[in-house]
Image 1: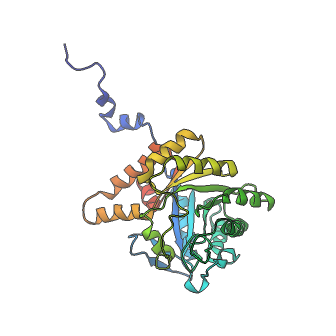
Image 2: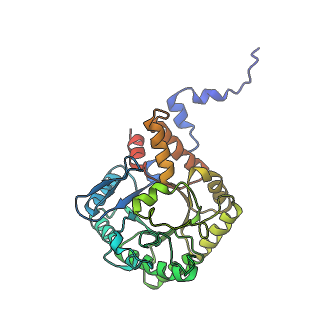
Image 3: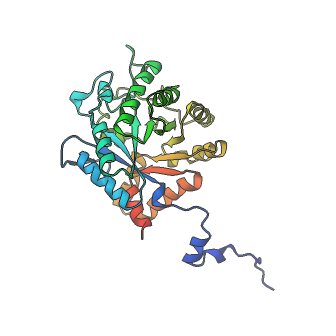
Length: 329
């Protein structure tokens, strides 16, 4: 008589077809959102040194990238502008300019590739001369209510240009409710809000700040408004408030270091939860690949599967195009 149990769990792992048949989690290109950085000019591609393989693109290049996304089944792109220094100010007024870089890119995308969703960042850090996400008082503290008023105008500006999803990333209290009320009042009833509900003050954002041109401007840190990495219960409170104020979906940022937060949010709230695999996470993978310590294809798919397994409906990732090509094989 065999000493082994009747049930051998390795049976279903023995072949590729069987592993696919028994997979508990499925990753497809439809689970991906591709973040794109916008630059001024025409025919411009500016490689970002701290994000190997990622560039800033002028609006025409952004349109070409969105067509690539469409052809590979990626349903949505996320836009982040690199605002020129002479258009930045203490109060970030360029965010309200209906012809700013973000709005021009939105209009171009909706004209050329209307079937691809456009997610837009709502925060003032790409527009302020000090690199913070909001307005400052004389002591350098980010003012909550005054900032929220400007964010409402920024959100309406992007919605009027054709944005499909407004994604406030600033972490000001109460801004979701104000933005939702304003969108409804202006007739933008189908514009979604994906709230950066649990955005942590993280050391993984460095390459992103290089990409949008705010890294050299920032004085101090963002710990007075972004979350403390020690806290999990607070994340649930943030999510609960944003949902009550009218968010359609919520985001946890960064990604892999906060898989526990994703799991807890998904367990507590039956809503779409997204993660942002941030610039520092991408850069670490690419650095490991560059020195032969990791296989890009395997690590990209494994990390994205981890997000899905944790409960994510989708993931914002700079590896979106690469992952979609792998998944299409």
